[in-house]
Image 1: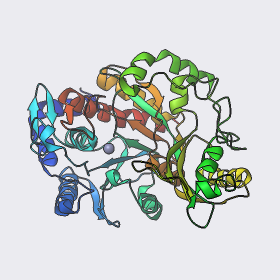
Image 2: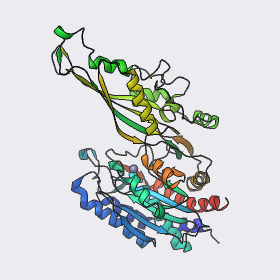
Image 3: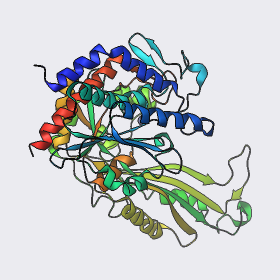
Amino acid sequence: MMSSPQAAIEYVMTHQTHYLQKLIEFLRIPSVGTSPAHRADMERAAQWLASFMEYIGLHSVQLISTDLHPVVYGAWGPEDPETPTLLVYGHYDVQPADPEEQWHTPPFEPTIQDGKIYARGASDDKGQLLAHLIAAEAYLRTSGKLPINLKFFIEGQEECGSTGLEDIIQQHRALLTCDAVAISDDGFWDATTPKITIGTRGLVYFEVDIRGPRHDLHSGTYGGAVHNPLQVAAEMIAQLHDAQGRVAIPGFYEHVQPLSAEERYELERIPFDEERFLHEEIGAPALWLGELGYSLRERITARPTLEIHGIRGGFVAEGQKTVIPAEATIKLSMRLVPDQDPLEIAHLFEEHIRRIAPPTVRVSVRLLSHAYPALIDRHAPAIQAAVEAYHLGFGTRPVFLRTGGTLPVVADFMRILQVPVVMMGFGLPDDNLHAPNEKLSLAQFFGGIRTAIHFMECLAQQLSSL
Ligand SMILES: [Zn+2]
């Protein structure tokens, strides 16, 4: 007799055309969340998902309203406390398609060519989230039940920065109770190697205002008497890093978790072409050495950083004007890593600025936004279940990597629901996310469905044996 995952996979393989049709239907809806002109399309996409959830036999299907586009929720399972529960997160909103003239096929008329489906949202994130829904359907059609309890939480504001999502998760904590969260919203490390993202960086973003004289002054009359706010800005910026490339804010590194020997060793084994990175991606004459004692990949993903984004003030138009500006503004941010607390770092930064600000100016600091970093234990049973599922679904074991970017939703799920988040993507690095000609390879789509089927089974085994 066939095992349940095998039967489900057989079912998917004999119904490939049907599932492709479903994907095409979903991709046809131009659910551009950032555009008011697509409001009705956003509603259609949410309704389409809700009906698909009902059609495959989920219960409690509902639209959870937010300030803008609703979250679509659906669940399967009796919530037997003995059976582990997985929450799948995804998003049905897509990036705008422009510049549309650069698409080889219309962005909202899904087109299959050379084993790939081209459409906006194919990889980010409709194809990937659908893989989990189809896995559930095939399992239910063949076995009548799932090996785990399953919940879907599909939002519509990811491309708008998931504003307000933290509050929604907080308010619906009881509904969202689970043992692990799965997110399939990124891709493989390379064409054949899956990747599990185990870390994201946090963020604090500031605006610093420096005010000197009451109004702009003439340098011929006042030069030599006034501490120019732009010069103060430069002097203060120069005190934000030390000679070793470290962030010079006292206490900044106090709660940074050191990189484990295991993680450093594994990172070194994953090939990384620094020459290509410098010449093709960056194009600067040379790389900055950054924080001494850390490899390039450690610096861009696992260590905290501080960047200046802009300095505003004075005269920058054509020609010349001998002005001493009355004020200057600096915009800067820091990427944070566990266990740095963004609000504590904000406080340390303000103290540091107060300490280094000269008495010749008035300085004010404004925190514009903050997000928490996250790090998932690679030995967590849910992560091990994903490793196993990739092995069964794609025949390859994944590598573990952190991203240098910030995904607030990951930290929100971890902090509010107190569970690990498994970031297991099925896309490929050349899927053209947020760019013209976005695509998803059909092999990745069906491999993703197989992996999602095995993941449920592996998760049931891993978590029940605890
Ligand atoms: Zn996405």
